[in-house]
Image (tube, rainbow, N blue to C red):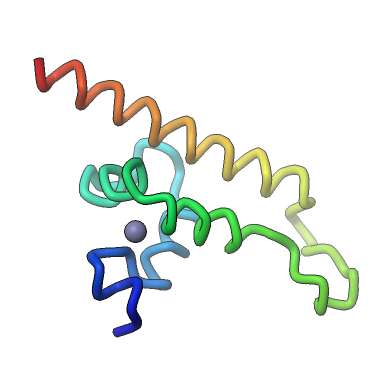
Length: 90
Ligand SMILES: [Zn+2]
């Protein structure tokens, strides 16, 4: 368990799950934590950031633009879920 996980943050495995999941498939717990934790938001973004060491060869099926779009979709889903929770809380 690293220091981030000890603070209640997502495990690296869970961050990867969020990166791969379609918006709407994420559990409310994950979304709720991501919405309130800038550390995990940065980790999610870093997950999809292209690594400079990777020989400059793009993934076969996913261009960097598509990956960025997917991250934005996930963030939009997080914001939508947050707004829904705020509405329900009233
Ligand atoms: Zn966190």
